[in-house]
Amino acid sequence: MTPEQLSQHLVDALSTLVDEGAVRLVDGAPQQVRVERPKVREHGDYATNIAMQLAKPAGRPPREIASLVADRLLQAPGIAAVDVAGPGFLNIRVDAAAQGVLAGEVLAAGASYGSNDSLAGQRINVEFITANPTGPLHVGHTRWAALGDALGRLLSACGAEVVRESYINDRGAQMDKFGESLLAAAQGRSVPDDGYHGAYVIELGTRIDREHPELRDLPADEQLVAYREEGYRLQLAEQRQDLEDFRTHFDVWYSERTLHADGRVKHGIEKLRQEGHVYEADGALWMRTTDFGDDKDRVLIRSNGEHTYFASDTAYYVDKRERGFDRCIYMLGADHHGYVRRLLAMAACAGDDPDEHIEVLIGQLVKVLRGGDELRLSKRAGTILGLRELVDITGVDALRYTLCRYPADSSMTVDVDAVTRQSSDNPVYYVQYAHARLSAILRGAVDLGIAAGERADGYDPAVLDQPREGDLLRALAELPRVVSQAAARREPHRVARYLEATAATFHRFYDECRVLPMGDEEPTDVHRARLALVAATRVVLGNGLGLLGVSAPERM
RNA sequence: GCGCUCGUAGCUCAGCUGGAUAGAGCAGUGGACUUCUAAUCCACCGGUCGCAGGUUCGAGUCCUGCCGGGCGCACCA
Image (cartoon, rainbow, N blue to C red; front, side, top):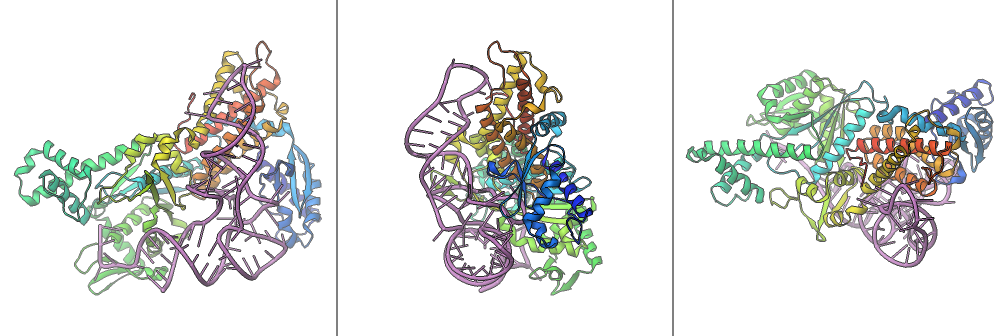
């Protein structure tokens, strides 16, 4: 029995009570009842506080309602016991056989177990890592790469149509500074103070000089443009390669330049003008974002005729909506949180509902410790520990998992030395080890000629009546709600935490319950049932790791 | 000054939109491998949930005010 099925039994029980007039509720019986897994074993397999919630509207003591629900619920199939406890909790125990069938359900669903249709029909655009193509990606980008990609996988698992997008800031003054820096480096001059610094600038500059000696003869201004463009091309290619190697794939790389070149900026501003939120003042063109909660109005076109960055953003948003996305998710660093309000106001100015069509997630910055000191991440100062270096040190799995483990809105510290040194007690290995262990058992079963465990119907669910078996079954039953909740709340870290808890539950099961027959022992129903449970657990861990983009090894 | 955000065990962090005795990992102490992977398991140690009020049957969680850290407040990108 899954929590969802148990919930339904509770809903049914309550409806019956309301229909019979045993409980009077103005709004009728609730459509949903949440069941939770108690921390203490004595509180049953599942518990609910529904009676306490209904006490006030029903005008009766919670324990009295609980008692009525308990009697009714006991008549539902698969319910072994229902107790009223404390102020009015319902503690529920589920029949072993009813619980045991879950292993078969997991096996039947296979790779799709955990997926659901809670977001079916939604077209979602997920934008993350908006970087300047002027240097390697740093740790902050890396966090979003892991988290953004995982969120994309989660939303897809909930049935949404997801497009992952990265916006390229390839327009503006910083691009020229980049070009100047590269050229200076190529000519052996020192890089301007306000330019880009770091070893990669020297390397890139000299590389361009080496590969394109013909640029030496160009006039200075053309030389600058050539360096800027070649540097852009090479740097972007490197970013993309680094991300692909990190298993983060973008469906669309969106260039800010093309927004202007294709006239989409003009179109976007026109759209806002039609909505009536654009005006001219002091020789500049403004958007009246204060109509929708912004602190002040924002300039789209400066009095000198140049478009602001915000104008590009506006056009980009309008374009996303016109490409058919119901919802646009932005994942921004904490240093941009001051931008949130105007983005939401901008969406409202475009005639949209900010609660419905746009969503901004803020990720706290990542601190990096190395040698006990905090590393300041400045691209210009050249003190960068990049995605590439981090991956080289820790490996893709460990880094992705570590970055996915924490909620985006909490700051985190990555101690490079610790990650390097402790690589064997990183939680990712704990989960992966469980998967490898499960795989080893299943290999052993094949060797012994017991293949029944792989089949959904090849076992007797009723023999899975040990506490550790029940714990494990209930853990497996959680995956669907973990996935839908993690997706709904945009919190991939819940998947990681769930995997750790489930791996722990499995390790305890393994410690106490022998799965394969020993020696010359003949396979029994218990062996076959436990094999089904083991196979189901492997499916769950494999699917969960997949949602985080982390590999599920067969051996370690 | 205004705004956003975070303060939970020695360290890194969870805490399932208000539930029962606040949890993991690491660090520390002590145990468990003749048979499926010991990268594992078990036990112990460890807390004024920043502080003070408030809301209610019930608050780490919601509200207010302080204290402390981070970040942001452009006709910059």
